[in-house]
Image 1 (cartoon, rainbow, N blue to C red):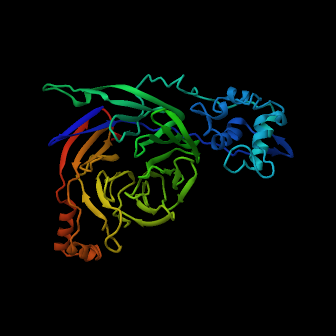
Image 2 (cartoon, rainbow, N blue to C red):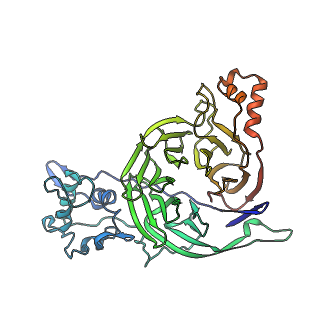
Image 3 (cartoon, rainbow, N blue to C red):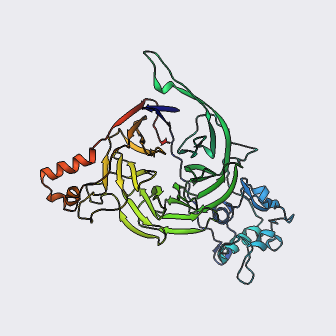
Length: 488
């Protein structure tokens, strides 16, 4: 659904969509077992597939079949790839080409390349499974989707994220196992008119520019690179694996797939130079990888709960992460060092998790939104020392919204802030002006350097006046029939 809001001579278009949650499926240990001294071959679903997901599927899937070898389809995995050799010979691990590739020789295995070899227990488990007949007991509940066999929707898809290309010509929209590229020139909105018109009955007509179909069934976050040539996708399969995908947009080719952890990942973001990609994990870690090689260059564990979103500073030297632990944290990228909590950390002041963050295009200021329903603007770095109970980085408090804020977006010209929220099956979007002066006077700096509990009534009024100065809501939309979970 498209909505355009006009101010002066500029039209700002934001798109709002709804999404629902997926179920979580647990996985088991991936090692061979014994009972009373007798070896028991591991089951494929519980013991072998998790190894392949973590170490092999990134380079051997329908979207990226390196050496013509697809492992996400069982029969194709058995048959092998361009080598012509049988990858798996049931009952005979020594004749199975896969085993030859993963067994280290002089400490180095051919597969996976440029990474550590599988552990001895993992190799033993795969060999034991092949020796027992290579039985497929995995209950696959969906087809292996590809360009030739794309997902078919019999209802509206769950849309969790979207992003415009820097030139505005493409809109990337999350789907099931895919990201859909929409030609924005084809977008036309038909709006109900008349005295009884219902905005929620408006419809949009669009033309696909492409479908980027990959391994992950759930897409959590998508972002175009600063030059618009690539698209980063974060997602995975709940309770099974997380995945980062890097797509070549023009060629619609998957350049990189990195399998990470055992649950979906969120909050993908590009460094300003387009060299790095950040994201947050369900294991509470913040990570950054090289966008070309997939090599991990940052690993940080300062959060206490899921990380929901990330964004780099203007120069790319710092990284902001927000999460369900109600915190907004600043990390130094070169040293991987946690620097500071940007928002207040005072017990009783925090009011729920933070779901989304975006940055001003030219200033190190961020806009956050979460469970308390209040969009807030913060400066990333302190101008006063931290004191107990302070929230000194706060720049502006925007008008409160109904329900939880699920998504925040700052326009590319830095003039508008959009926020989307949901409550009781209804959706809300607010557009606010970002055209205010964040400068802090020397007098106000002196007040912020003091304990908040020591402020006089007059000082508190001055702080409140600064936090609300020139705040202006310029547009609003309420939908009665759906929650709103993504805005761009």
